[in-house]
Image 1 (cartoon, rainbow, N blue to C red):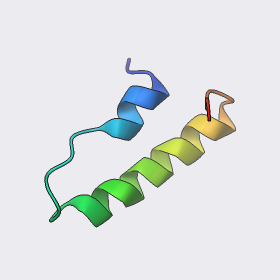
Image 2 (image 1 turned 90 degrees about the vertical axis):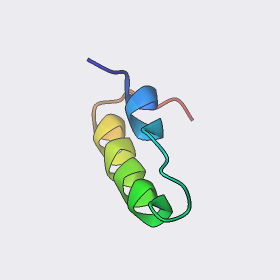
Image 3 (image 1 turned 45 degrees about the vertical axis):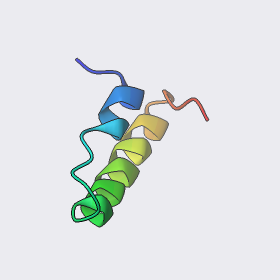
Length: 40
């Protein structure tokens, strides 16, 4: 399984998928934070 940091990066698909990527990153970051695995 990927680390939270790796999952939050994901694959950026240019500017077109930027907003969707940010939303996904936010959700993953929230999930990681709730598990106490965030490092920022």
